[in-house]
Image (cartoon, rainbow, N blue to C red):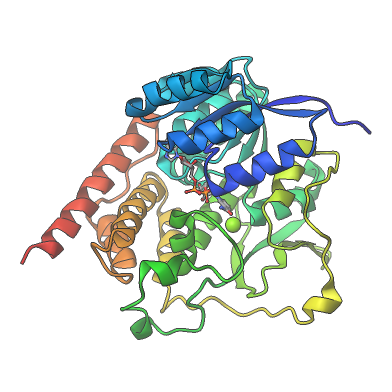
Length: 394
Ligand code: NAD
Ligand code: MG
């Protein structure tokens, strides 16, 4: 079966997911083309990608980079059009410059472009989990109304997507089990985590990822965000979503049915598999990822998560249960705390402390509109920044 041709917008092209997406696209030159490349601020890295992939459009978020982007494209003799700013990005995502969007901007900064892709009915390869945490109901509704096909790219959710190919399967579902590697600090107690450095936190044992999600994996907030993500993608009233630590990162998640069957998707920890599923679905296409040699890997281990050492996972469950704006507050406080940790302004244990303090200080209100969610996001960032400022004062 041949793959239908796709014009792909890669948002977050200079990042880790962006690189994996462009790798898969380049393996299918007859069918896939990168028509729009967008990045935050690394103009030189974006220019190098434009030279290699020859998109019709390149977008830099930071206006200060626009002249360098335009001049760099001209100097390289490329006819790629230069753009800057989030409005230009949203317009391109909604236009016929693309039919498929890889949403791989990190953090809440990815919300608008992800929503624009959903509203325009695009095939949406959704890596930007924070947009689902922040505005999951709105995003899912927008996708449903515009008939956008969302393929989750997060490996766990991509695994569940593969295990639940049609709506009938959902009827007999008993629980969802998200696997977690446990991150670089698995097995440590809370008191052993006070002095860990950003370098140790981003050194993930199994996955190579951007700095923010790597820290999220070390605190287990990543799994917390993924529980909320799974709720929006697959949740039904009364359907438990549980977390299982699996250090080998080969079983990417499991679904259990009422008849006692459990289905899982397995594979090497390489995001190109999820992205190939996203581009090809329901077809299967080459991703560049080798098959899984279970004999070579030997053991598959499973253990419960340690919520004492890693309270971020507990906080995420609490925010999901509280509902309304609580997940938006959790996400924003976490973004501020992780960024401060990476800048060495706060220690590792301050991350859960800041998130917990912010959630306690800002009780949830109904998530009735995008404006209400944005307001919760702004308030939480302000509150978390203030707390960091107070702690830093002598
Ligand atoms: P990364 O830090 O490597 O890359 C982030 C990208 O976003 C960069 O291209 C950056 O330029 C761009 N960006 C940042 N701010 C922007 C803005 N305001 N406007 C436009 N572009 C902006 O991050 P990553 O690891 O590739 O992760 C991207 C997203 O995918 C995150 O939401 C993450 O949670 C999710 N995800 C990543 C992985 C992984 O393996 N890396 C796995 C699952 C989910
Ligand atoms: Mg994941």
